[in-house]
Length: 157
Image 1 (cartoon, rainbow, N blue to C red):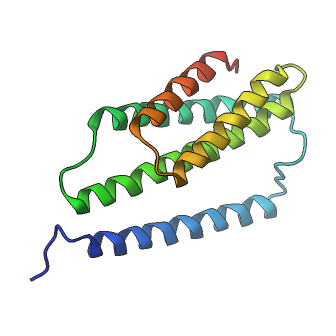
Image 2 (image 1 turned 135 degrees about the vertical axis):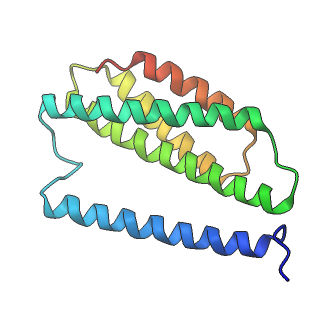
């Protein structure tokens, strides 16, 4: 009988999830290209504002999850710790992707939005991406969550 606390089954599950996320991301990119969406182009203001509002809502939800994660601490078993570390990385990766999208929308709204806000968004996305691959600590995640909360207050949609 297999020991459910052993990390090998958890590792295989994480590999499957990672592969599925990569495939889904590629499929979404293909759909966007086929529909003529190009992130490097200037978007219509109305559309960019609507998208930014939706993205900001998603970022707010991820920020709540990040804050809750900081409060929970480290799991007791090795398998649970491995699974939690994987989920932490996915959360931070999702945060980074949403912040990059928000940055693109803010660039479409420039000069109506400050370049400081757009640059702050870019920096937050880079920080979330860095933390998603680093051996980071809950304190860094908590600090990022606070900075993102401040950013959410500054975003006018």
